Length: 208
Image (cartoon, rainbow, N blue to C red; front, top):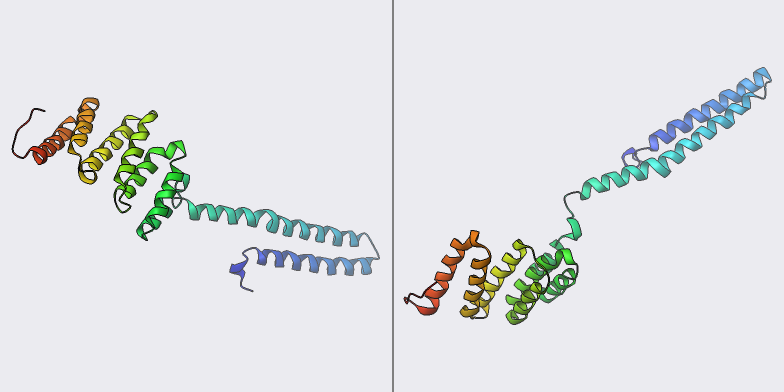
């Protein structure tokens, strides 16, 4: 047996040896002194042995195992399980399975926006269902959204309408909405709007 396989086995063996030697010593003393009370020491020694083994095997070892398991997992598992397993499905080409997993995760309100955005990227890309992606992104607005989430959904819709649905009019309308709601990002959004207009109308300048 290797001690590294059972770290407290040496402690158990040592306590057992002490109990055995103590038993032999107590028996010898009982014979020499003819005092049977020495045999009470035997019971006490083996009671200590039993308590020690029970403490190590039943409490201390499971607690240490659990602690090191926790340390091994800290930082590797994100809250809610993360998306690594779903991303692995997508990398392996199982796009529909990954999209279904995202749909299941989107049922949980805290993950609703993130999971739907990830699902929409699959629907609009390898699954070639941009219309479904647009409908699902629009449905996110049926409930309250934080400013950050609303902005992310809006940009996703702009990209979807511009590149997958070939609907620059809807893309420009969404950009205008974002400009009105988020003036802090207006400069970048207006640049994107000008690019869309240039693509649609060529060199013709139109009012912003």
